[in-house]
Image (cartoon, rainbow over the protein chains, first blue to last red):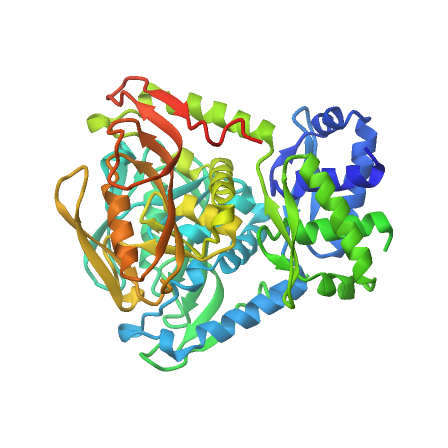
Length: 271
Length: 271
């Protein structure tokens, strides 16, 4: 294989496996070259990815060591995504009765899901996340995209559990919007004990759902490393969870009126 | 930029955008080289990807023309995935009362989701799919992975619709397992008219749910190009939908007993 073909080959092995550890010995054996040659290729690929702002390739030490592609959204794509979302979310026809926002189109758009998943994964890349947790239904595609980029399992909290969940752990809580007592459950078998959990959802208003998820996760002795949401309302400013990360903040939610949309400063424009 | 760096750069632009058309003029402008140089790079990348069994790069003609990475799961990964799933599904502890199967761990595993999404996308790559449709809840991560690889929107059918769905279209149907009348709904705004729809789900027994989805989609004048499921029961052999694609077939489902698991011949071992 030509040297330049080998670079492409190593690049495809890394880029199609975000956050997965790939064995350099294994790559070298499959290519029939020395490990040092693969390491040189990886260094060159790392350089190009870093210049392009598309993340980096980290070496993981130890016996099970290897290399791992840690993805990042390039600055230009970050900015154009923020602009597109601000424009889309400010559409007054999204604003429904009761201050609710129609977002199903965005939450089904493969590019939007991929971008959000990558931004969430970036924001929590240093947090040694073991599991991404979401509540059915609308947050699931976002949470799946995040879990893919972090390469950790996805656990879905159910509002109504079924026989296929097996034994479950449930909590009751008071819903923020309906003020009614509701239930949420996790399959005992799906949720590990003492995990570092990232909670992902599409929307946060008061934070009652997120608070209930934290309570449910405490039954599994989990550490909640953060709560990441696509959009949050500016009002109430103080939520029922101590901290959260929102990509976009929405203000003045009223049926048929354009809301004020602000991208969170923490993720736009940072390098 | 060195020629070999440029190859890596073009490769990352393509590989991180499965099924998306990337403009050759745009790539050439960003690199400051002639379009013909980019076309040569793309040809070399195509050659490496094809030899690795990881898909191809197609040229899309016309004014909005460009190049598009069409991904594929390499044969070795296809076989090891099939083997791992056969082993996992044959675990007798998955078999719950009433012939139900616990699969939430697999349906939350990022590698399993990615593989299934890619296999479904491959199987329907020639069908000009406009939208991937699933029914909440367990099929959503699979459907999201499929939509990502096909680069089309995901539409989620709700069992109980909410204010955030906006206006909905609903149908009533008799559930295969409970024999009760149930409802399913799609947000009118989320589902386009006259679309070519691929229906994705985690499990099929009689096919009552899939049949109801087809009926619901007919309200939008959709063409259902196929129904793709992760697992289907061998019994009943004749389902309520005329055709479906299952990756794995399950037989002898009984609480605590190891079932017989067969990978569908159509996708294992094909080249």
